Amino acid sequence: MMNNLKQKGYTKAVLGVEHGDEKNKAMYQFIKSATETYPDGTVIEVDYYGKEI
Picture: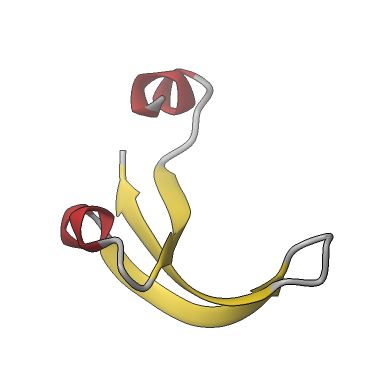
């Protein structure tokens, strides 16, 4: 995925990480926290992380 984004000209990848996902938290830099609502009405807290590619 990262190579594909880089080939398309992107310089940064950002993803939403749920609080218990320690693996992705360790690989990316923290950007911000937010509340997201799924189409079914479920509300979750999400941390956004990113990294240069």
